[in-house]
Length: 346
Length: 280
Picture 1: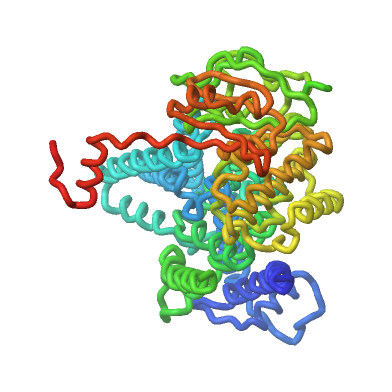
Picture 2: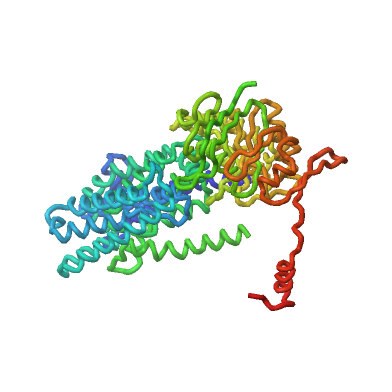
């Protein structure tokens, strides 16, 4: 048993950070414009004024690709993946349900309504920030609606919250569909592109847009992770141990929604990460949220960046969008873990 | 004796359903009080209301001289712990993680458990005999192990008052008696225990006092011998009940009288056995 704990610690604090570095390196070197890992390292070293790799020459084109295309893309991938991973873990904890994900409280459907509205009104063409801003506002409004529908006598029963999340999601999807039917084909294309979710054409603007909400949301979720353990024991147990349950539920819901909404609005709807990554991590290191949250944070980033890189490598001259890759890679691995877990526990 | 709990004119239940009417009693330090009565009488409702899980419909409850409505959540949790009847665990938390959650009221929001908290949790697990199960997930335990882990969790809360909802139900006779014995030991050491009990004979042997609940009210309150009478139990349970003292053990034994098999009943039995056609 002690061995299991040592394995966990090794996995969380050594293996996962190494994987983050590897994923970043893979993402930086792969793409249509070929660059070696050495070249990537040299570019970083030259930019920082360090004496390493001084014999490697980095052409201005390589420098430009690395700095203006690949680095922001990789950073957005890390941020969004990390945000989705940790938010998924938090929501599964709040609902005491391993099948909860950030979509369940209406974040994605709200963001879609916001995005489709921005496209239909034509404001998305005016400014890069307007589509994300609309999506963010839509997501937060949807969560607000879900929570206020389920709140009764100052309490939020988990089952009611889940049900109102489903209802709000269906209603907002209908709204999205209604707006879509009156849009022209070019705008529909634009929406379709957004809704699949991808990291292509992400610029430094997107990094700046997402960094504050995702970093601060994640920071507070990590800081409060001990409370999530008690919350996951269920309402009665948490109240009996002296926890103000409604306050903490609302707090965690807001933090997770903020983080997810920021991720969704800069990269579109990327499914699967928020559901599968926390689940994988729970199977690997156990349910204690003090380990589960940092693990989901790192693994989410690794998973998204690796999926994005593979999407660029697999077919020469063509990119598979990351929203599709996450499902293609995540599903079989998830099934494998599940089967193994079932075998071990029987 | 210091009064630990006072219940005065309490109406308990749910929004549209009053389950208990006008219940009043007090509990002194060191008492081990058993709540008994038929299924659905409101024993658990009373316990939940006393612990503040359910809001009282009317009346007052005080714990250690302070009304429970005025107690901040953490302060209340330092005075009274609560063991639920059914605890559904979704995730595979280990026994140690569960027991450590009992230290919640003692920690400021930003803190992690200190060495002292971990030592208390270890001591509680050792006391209830589950120290070697510390790493085992609660889900993978037998009923008896699980109940001892949850008892350790409640003890880790270090409260003077313990509310236990059917702590021994569904366990083997060995574990049942063990749980009751733990409670009596704790009471002898000065803690106050209020528990819901189904096994009347066990309740009679171990509790210092019994409260009989039935027909929406507190029907009797006193020493086990005074409360467990054939007349009272028959009234509460709505079925003929006999009480005898076993001369070998000096313990009270409670059993129901068999209903006389009427013609209708024996006919039904024949139908079940497939020997007769069902009469409409």
